[in-house]
Image (cartoon, rainbow, N blue to C red):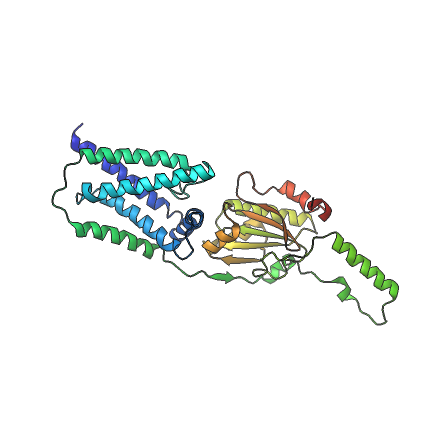
Length: 357
């Protein structure tokens, strides 16, 4: 094969690698994908919430720029190939450290959520890419007359395009007030003693009976705690409640919501269900509830606060069992810790004395 053909094959392979990597980080939608990349990949590295949005867009823009620049003749050997090798070397060092500290688990984020890849797989991929770049450097002829402004324009253009495609927006919350059709799920707790119509003074015996009932109720339930979710749903820290983290377009989330509704219909004492939705494709929420068979009280929060609330290393669907603000079970994702309806039915029936063991 001719030397020129080999050079072009290498350039096309490397270009495709970087462009696909950049495009994958924008799947399924730019803002959602980039925000997810920030929370899952950049926050654990120590990036602050104010720096991460800029770094993520600049990094993806650089990937696009390198993918395009590798196909240009301008400063190919002097700037483009060395810069590409340097970037890959930084990735290899970072991934090696991550693997050493945390093991070969999880998605490294190289291809976003589109093509999950473990850290070791990513290291191997990057080392192969570095080898191809070294080979290309040796085969490619010396740089001829080059246009630095073209190279600079490609870089700046790609970075600016990312900021236009996925603008940084302030964290916003959209409150959805429950409608009348979901009032049955609100779980408003009413003190039974407040419903008494007292026309005569309560006798000592009646007072003692009420006191014993209250004491027994206290013994059979955990002490009141602040879960931090009162900011979303008033009264959620009273009695048994179920808090869910769902994404409107997530099939697994829809299945879990349907399971919860089926359980609720069969058990009149089933705890009220509340939902925190990620503010991604909110137009799908009516379809979500239609599939579930009911409409739970819900609130939408932005992508980054949603992932933060969900918790590091956790994924959707998330289901929490709360009792007086205390968390007793937290299901998440679709793997080992996924929602288990059979287990959950037994869990919510257990007295506090068994839960606290």
